[in-house]
Amino acid sequence: MDSIINQITEWLKEMLVSGIMSNLSGMFDSVNQQVADVASEVGTAPANFSPGVFALIQNISESVILPIAGMILTFIVCYELIQLIIDHNNLANFETFIFFKWIFKTFLAVMLISNTFNITMAVFDVAQSVVNRSAGIVSGSTAVSSDMLTSLEETLETMEIGPLIGVFIQSLIVQVTMYALSVAIFVIVYGRMVEIYLMTSLAPIPFATFGNREQSQIGQNYLRSLIALGFQGFLIIICVGIYAVLVQSVSVTDDIISSLWGVMGYTVLLVFALFKTGSISKSVFNAH
Image 1 (cartoon, rainbow, N blue to C red):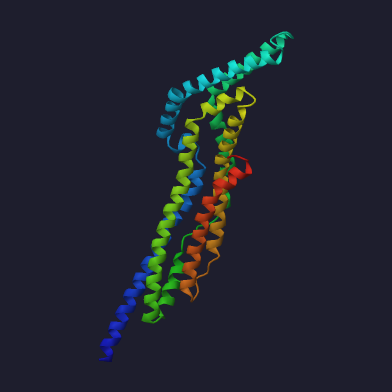
Image 2 (cartoon, helix red, strand yellow; image 1 turned 30 degrees about the vertical axis):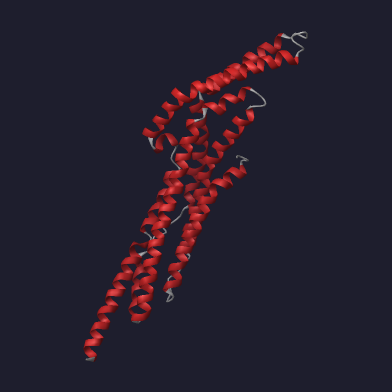
């Protein structure tokens, strides 16, 4: 009878250890893949991220938004001319220079909205250069090594059935949570690029406001927002680098549960920090 009970006990232990190892070996794969892709994704220019989407956005912007920007610019140019005339006492104090000034400002405004995409892409090219040079801070892999898994398995085999059941249930909970966190990382990284495309699609309208001193605040804030979006990628790289260092500092000891929840805690911290990168970047560049 004792022999049968021992066999059943060993069978349950083997099944639980196998289930726990299966959970652990695949637990961080999804998050690790997302983290590994972050550097390459945020370091990709909008034109190269999805050429098809970029071409669509550019076509819509130039065919739909640009005419609206042209009408706005026409209104601003006319308003600017009227303002110049009023400021000089209805041309009583006539100066030829004011017309040359008005023509030059109009020329610059037309050139701005005509080359909107070139200017916006130049902003992101500068930001992407910074991001690509900083990508080297992400050193090493955050994946669980085979040696660590072997050590874990040896520790699990020395445990009783009761603690093993607890470890199995908690590893299952942590695994599901890690999958959810990997989705959150995906949404943050790709959501930034979607936001860039949305901002770029409306670029001609704020660029049309640069021709007037009062209305130019719209264009200036838009330009600051573009720069903030570009440098948000730099902050994302910094977050991933910090995460990689923190995860590598977690040592798997006899307290397996503590190690598991520690890694998951760092991943939650990573997601929280990634969510904050947008607001931090806008705060630095005074964009709203």
